[in-house]
Image (cartoon, rainbow, N blue to C red):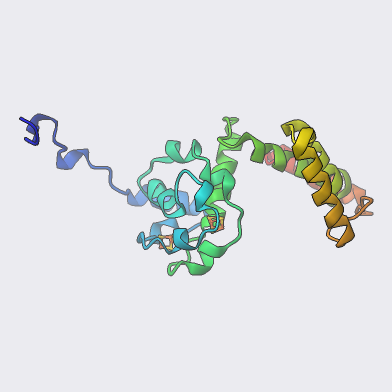
Length: 201
Ligand code: SF4
Ligand code: SF4
């Protein structure tokens, strides 16, 4: 009958997924984010400026982590869309470091060689790092040109809008016309060599 409970498929107490203390201790030690202290007040999500684009709210990321559902997190877009603005950390009564947690999760995906749920963000990170490896500093002009060429934003109407934005930034001094770089290239080379050996880049 409609509305009648189906007892044979009802969940049993043993089916529930519960946080495990040893799992929480391990992920907190690895990420340094303090996720075990979260009590789900949602203050992080209520202040996050990017929830409109996210598939999981920041508090949900912490909750899934507490429950050991790491596969869900590695496939979600939220971890790539977080802008590390620190708003959530400032608002959290328990100092759960969500930006650090998001970084740790994207690093985990990257190191395992798995597909990023937001390929464009990963591409942007790669281009950014390539630029830093070359000069020790980012040159916004070449960074954006490389990004737009690879993502189709350098053509058509979008290209015009981007060119206008670039000009406005130049006029206001928010972007330099020519790239600048660090003088200590040997130090820069050694730094990136070490990061490569560790699998960080
Ligand atoms: S603000 Fe802090 S305690 Fe509250 S849900 Fe977010 S992470 Fe958890
Ligand atoms: S650091 Fe990330 S999750 Fe936290 S408020 Fe900013 S964008 Fe949202």
